[in-house]
Image 1: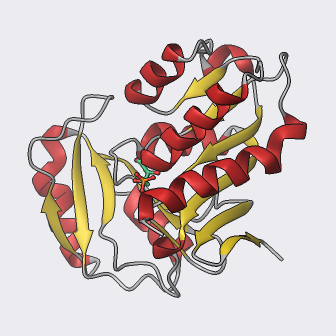
Image 2: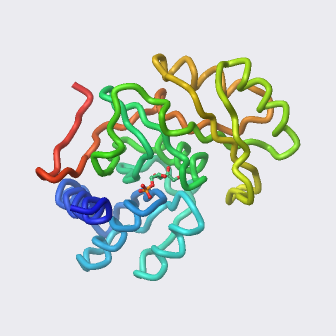
Image 3: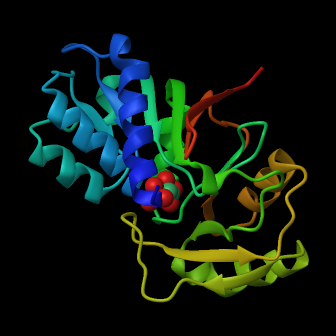
Length: 224
Ligand code: 5RP
């Protein structure tokens, strides 16, 4: 099965998994990327009414508007019952690397604001130790060089993602060469560097559940 077919498969499984949590009065959070896009498509095809969505990017907003879902401001929804999003990598403890699509900051905000974070991915994203997928970091433009030097001190090999400006007007640094054995400690250390908006490690607020699509079907990883 192709990677894209697995993404569609896991999006369908996610819809089945959370269908009982969806109704016309309940807003949810929806993330960014090709897997999240498949989830939006499945939601649209279902015809089910939901109480609007908080989107993690302008691209997701546009896709949701196309299927008639109202876009909500997180400042007016309060906490959300559910957030559905993809990931670039996940470990057995449900820590994630996110930000391949440069939407990590809004993704992290919505994840933090949500009671249940359902991550959806194909099985190529599953690793024992995070770090092979370069860790994205959103950075205020004037701090790019400073942050780069600090990341070298932390043992990383930073690369400026050329030509990408985030929805928040910032730049992305991708950090190669890390073996992330303590994701929470590294998330804290990177987020303390002046100029860092946030790093793409989701360890302090990891997923509550991950649905992973493989040739053998979809499996669910939970925290216990
Ligand atoms: C965007 C993200 C995405 O969730 C991540 O890049 C996965 O993307 P895809 O579903 O296309 O593989 O973090 O910032």
